[in-house]
Length: 460
Image (cartoon, rainbow, N blue to C red; front, side, top):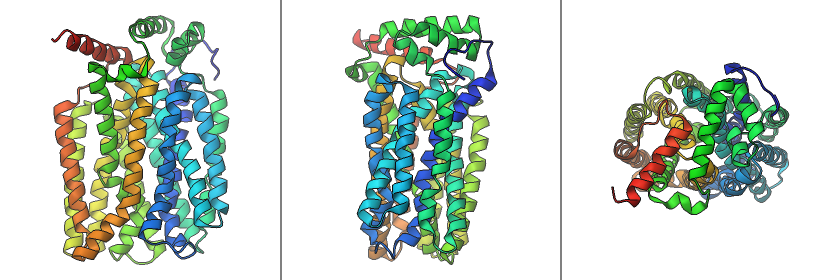
């Protein structure tokens, strides 16, 4: 698979490219989920309290804030493929450093470096997949990235469970080296983004890749549309704040921030801790039940894979986020009335299922498709910055929030009431602001915002 390949349209080819790029998403899920099992065994050797426990979990998120900042420059200067190569190097150094860190300070430093790779790959992977995907397959193929994230989460939890007997938390972090090597090798073979190549005036290379994906006739038509759209754009950062793109930017930021502050991510990240608080039993038993939750997440993500290109983006999101709000209410009631841990587990199944069927994959699908070609890298990187700031805040303050409610009211139920309110506000935003983008090409979506911008400038 090199950038000089020609041939007929091949669905298997674009799926294979997407699979390699989605390993970046796999490492995102794997890297950030390892801590959910390891943190239980790190509390005593590192003498963690609620604040430092939050820091141990959130340090990777803190580093992830730097990933989109780098992406603002790297995605356009060096391309999507080389940016993913850099991300994989950050992952590898972090995996080794975290495994051998002798104290909390060094652990946090190495986890932050891995977070840089996470932040970069979560922006670049869906962008790259969207840019090589035919319009009819784009939702499904970008969801491959979400599916790979879930696979990473599942495998990480299973590895944590197997290594929990004996408390081998250092080996949990070292295990990440194997999928990182797969990504490094796979990236050697995938082509560059045809839209990035067209933007950089590498027209023959862009046409060859588009031909391999769509066939010659469709490739020539698509390349003309790409060039027509590029001619209407300046590519300057300030273009994002003009009327049409400003609205698209607001939608992207709000959706990605909601995807983190809705509380379900914390159900996943802190699943073993939450289950221990609910009285589930031993550490290994708590991690084992987290395996069941993550298996459920995988199943619902597979289901989402078939739904996204069949139904509109809006109705799926409205139904799913409402389900998340109801799950938080049930979770809060379970803690408030001190119900059996079975009911807490049931609420976690409902919340994570609703999340991974809808908001988790669709927030990235919509983000990857709503911006015009020349500005897409800058836009996704800026939105990614907001995403990781909100992710860091949630990971850092979740144990502090539940601890605050417990100290004041002898129950953490109130925290889930807060998250239910956040989800309901997300439902309102989607209903009022989000346009439908199903089955539209990237160029058609880009023209929509550019024409919206022209109408606004004329006062229409």
